[in-house]
Structures are given as C-alpha cells and as structure tokens.
Length: 407
Image (tube, rainbow, N blue to C red; front, side, top):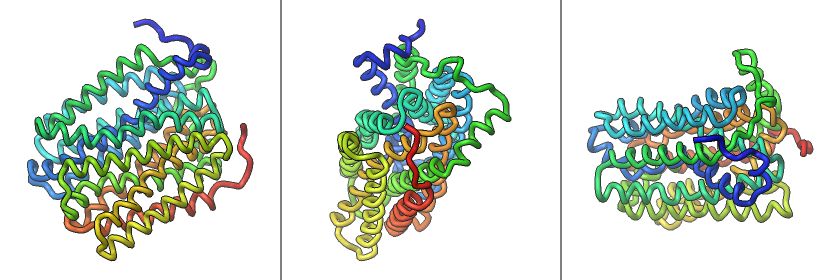
C-alpha cells in the first residue's frame, strides 16, 4: 500500500488538511455511529430476544465500557508505537466484531460482542484526538476540533435515520452489517490517507512504568482533570439521552421509528451547527469562555427538561430544552478537549484516553439507570439530564485552577 504522505505536507497543503479533517472526523464519529444507529431497533430487539428495556440498554452499556477500556489500552500503545499501527488493528477488530453482532442469538451474547466492538472502537476515538494534539494546541486545536464536528456531527444526525431505513428493508442484524462495512471503509481510508503524526523520536518507551507515568502526569494536573471531568459529565448527559430517548419518545410519547429518527436527527444537527458557530466565535473569544457558556446552557436545559416532564407538559415543551441540552455539546466538546490536552503534548495518546475513558465510564453507569423505572416513564431521563448538566457546570467552574495555559 505504501506509506502515506509525510506530515509536513499535511500541515502546509489545504487538500491534505481537508482530507485529514474528513478522516479524523470519521474516526471521531465511529463510536457515536456505533451507539446511535441501532437505537430505533431497541423495541424490536426487546421483542425478538424477549428481554426487558434494561437488558437491551445493557448492550449499549457494554459498548460504552468497551470504549472506555479500549481507549486506555490504545492510548498508551499509540504513545509508544505511533498512531497508525494501533489504529489499524483496532479498526480490523471492530469490523469483525460488528459482523459477529449480527449473529448474536440473545441479549447477553450481543452485550459481550458489543464490548469487543466498543473496545476496538476505542482506538479510533483516541487517534482522532491525539493526532489533532500532535499538530495543534490551544485555540488552534479548539478550532480544529470544531472543524471535525462538520463530519462527526453528522453521526447523530444520520445514524438513527439510517438505522430506521435499514429496519424498513431488513431486521436489526442488517444494522450491524452496515457498521461492519463502515469499518472496512475506514480501514482503507486510514491505510491510504492518514500519515503518521508521531515521529519515532517523540515516542515513549513501552513498559508498565512508562504507561503508568503517561497516565499519572495529566491526572496530577487540576487543569486537565477539571476540564476532562466537566466534559465527561456533559457528554454523559448526551449518552443518557441516547440510551433513553428511543423508549421515551416512542413508548411514552408515541412517536414512530421514523418520527424518532427525525427528532434525533434535528438534535444532532444542532450539535453540528453549534460546533461551527463555536469555530467562528473562537476568532474573538477564548475557548474557556465558550466552554462555560455551553455548560451553563446545558445545565439550564437539563433542568428545563426535568421540569417539563414533571409537569406532564406537551411533547413540544420537552423537545425544546432537550434540543438545547444536546446541541450545546457542540460548544462543550471542542473547547474542553483542547483545554485539557494543551499542557500534555508528549503524552497526547494517554491524555486523550483518559478524557474518553472518563466520558464513557460515567456514561456506562448512567445509561442503564435511565431505563431502571421501565419503558413507561420519562422521569429518569429528566433527572439524569438535570443532575449531569448541573454537575458539569459546577465542575467546569470550580475544579480547574484559574490560570493561563501554555500556548
């Protein structure tokens, strides 16, 4: 296949930069695509397997746990072996696991295979952030992460609609075959179009001591911990929405699978729009101010969703704050990620893994709780959005030391 073009040409050439945005955006969208596409099939899976809502949501939780663990493994590997090699291994394993998911005979087996699928997807999530940190820092990194949302922001927009379309012509098994095909396409894109951004002289030695040191350094930095934890809580609110929205909107409020896909897509479009608005505002405003604005809006929206559900308000009064709460992650994610990674360029893979693991570890705990009261109430979802949004705002304000970060 040959070696891709050298890193300097990517940094200078506009076409190379666009290609990098597309590939890294696809990698960043890999995990959300895996979570979102089969959401419209939750009721069908519950019927097919004769399982409860919580049992089906366990297949989402296991994937979240897999992504969290996978990022820790692939993050340290990428700092020691470079970005491309571990990434390609992860993509191949993901493709195989996705195909096997289509053959699962019951919910428990599917949950196990989803763990493997998520573990392998962790390589893509780590690489998408670490490569950006290899090339950019500070505001430039925040702008690049916002650019990636042009691609990965389409995942929540298109995934449920694609899943609904697949369900109209086949069964839930077809969704996992589509994911396997996506894995094949990304293997080709990375092999042919993604350069190695971590030269050999910048790689860290392998070994348990070096791995632990790579994780320990950012964990001792309050600036990193504060932004990573605030991001993890905010993103977990989105995952609570992902885990509960299918049952809430279809079973509680009576939407069809197509209508659910439309609502989910509109909310995903909001993420994309906010991400690009964030990119424009970064020309005049520093990332931390935009981050706190996004966290504040998300917290208010979460409380609004809970209030509307508690008051048994019409669906429209639930969907409006829900849209705000989901869309504002477009401000939170690029800025929090860039700020957290700023001071740790030489362990970008490990730091990236810790950011992602925080997100998915919290989400793995929250996701099954959304369905704990059954399929006939939206109250757990409202509580989760209000609590996580408020906690993210408080964490983002209190935990990081108020100081100027390195350029």
